[in-house]
Every structure is written in C-alpha cells, then in structure tokens.
Image (cartoon, rainbow, N blue to C red; front, side, top):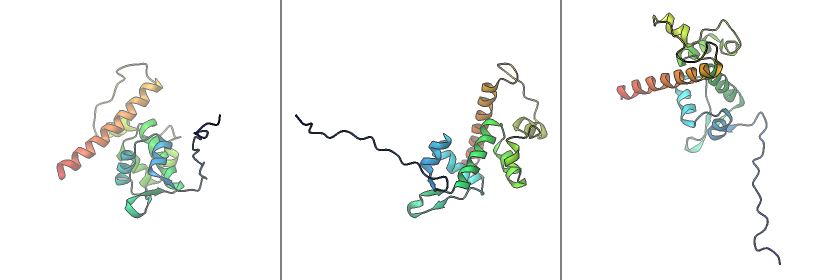
Length: 154
C-alpha cells in the first residue's frame, strides 16, 4: 500500500558564496552573537555599514562580516573594551591587535585611567577559560554602562 504522505524532505539551506551578502540572522548565527548585539555594535562602530533595504532589513557585505568577526574577537577573546576597539579601529590597528602580544587589553586601559590593578580571583593565572569569561563579562558590562547612559539621557 502506498503511503499517503510522500517522503519528508528536510530543506537544505544552500551554502552562500564568500562574496554573497548576509542577513543579520545569518551573521548572528555565524558569529554566535545575538542580533541585538550586532545592532548595538553598529551604533558604536561607524565602520560597520550594512546595506538597508525596504523595511529596514540589513544586508552585510563580506567586509562587514569580517570586521564584525574582528570586533567580536577583540572584545570577547582579547579582552578589549568597546572604547579600546574603537581606538584600534581609528588607528587602523584592529587587524594586528588580535595577534600582537604588545596590544593593550582592558586591564591596561583601566590602569591607564587610574584604576587599581586587577587580580585573578579564581583559577591559575593564564587559565584560558576564566580569562575568556572575564573578557566576555567585561564587554557585557561596557555595553550595559553605555545603555544605562543612553537611557538616562532619554
């Protein structure tokens, strides 16, 4: 007896070429960063300029995606603050900062501003997972401070 329902096909998402434009959903998924964070970064980094079509739908060029990837790496993996990444982008040093041991992450920025030196609370110094979490939390805190200031000004 023939089945009333044809074989279920799982729709396959075609792989886009490297030069194709990407939607905010695709970029968010690729970078594992929420869409609202990408929109927030657009307000902080004027270098990110996705094309906007009808209804405000964003289309990111490959160079936008690469810039977002560098920003994500500097904020979350290298421990830079938003202001630190802005400075690197202004000075044209964002590409080298991810690979340069002489780069100034958040601790150096805070010390330059007169803040006390940060110490490791848990784990051994150089413990990568702890460092990554601290950098990510620091980036989130920076974003929250900016959002608070925006709300106070509204």
